[in-house]
Length: 370
Image (cartoon, rainbow, N blue to C red; front, side, top):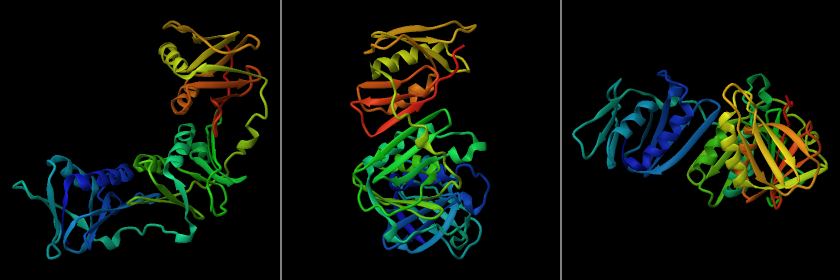
């Protein structure tokens, strides 16, 4: 095998491959990236047996072939040399250090040990008819509005991913950690084949969100135990989380008695300042009076912070204790200048909406007032 490619063309793809297998540092086939050169293209594959990645980049092919090399060291080599043309060669007549990396503009060559490509795990596939089209922009929005609410409690593995279903003529993504819930639904998607609701690991969603440009569409397929994404020159798949996701519809309040409007940027800045004096509990107090919202950190040995901001509210005086992160994280992804917050009483869930309302919302359970 022999091919030549510009460093900047290949390095980004090898960086992605390394992200997938970064937890593996031993010299095993799963620490390797597969390289296959043929007909002016280089196919790159990586997998950790749960998430799999494949991409194709143009190269000048001198001789077709395939092999696998230790991804971490390959990436280190590519990072160490300046931009320019690099020649790669697999010498089948030698054993051991038989994959040569040679920048054409430097008097140096690197020789990496390789493992035959036939030992590389097979990557899952699905029939082309199983795919449906979704605009990249909408998929990015769905992931952004939910992924931060995924639970990291491994004892509740069924909440360690984003729930994905097609119900009531809309695609839905939901995430919860038991104290908050984020929901988004997209109705303007056609030709979606029926599939049972599935739980997608956040690792693959973060990868798709990172690589997607927001232009064009992405093809999505849901199989029995895997989900697949195809867009541009990428093919990405992931094993699904096996478990029963909570009945999120029971958590969504049917109606709430009170609401107020507040400027998103003003609330974000106030939370940033008040949280400077918040300790491990992350508890802040939100006090509401007519047209006035007061944020107060929980008093501690360090001290206390208090800030008043204006809001549009004409309900009863109310004091709610909240985990400030559960406000900060939704505010980062809300795409309106104004937030509408709905609630009934200090002990029940509050709901954050954009104003005007969009196709997503975020629910937060209050903390105990101490």
